[in-house]
View (cartoon, rainbow, N blue to C red):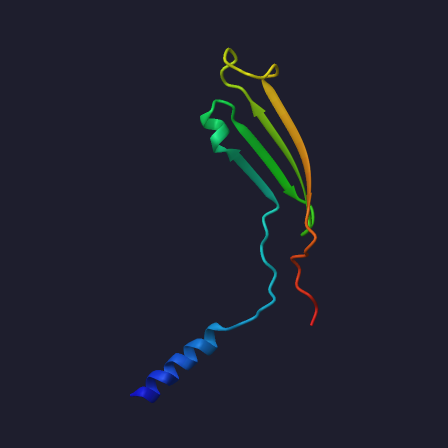
Length: 94
């Protein structure tokens, strides 16, 4: 009985271990909403586009819902950003 259990456990372990190098379906677009700013009546919406596996561009727009109690002189705030990574996500060749 012990040998049967050990054999089944070994077969399950061998069948689940794999290192396939298949292409992942990476999403290129991302839309985010800042929930804390939304609760504070200054919602922020961000759009980010993945250019390569290491770089992306993004744009954020925030606006005031309540114009009377705004601490800022401007009721709209926008921001652009460029993100890069020093580590590549692509697998190295064997």
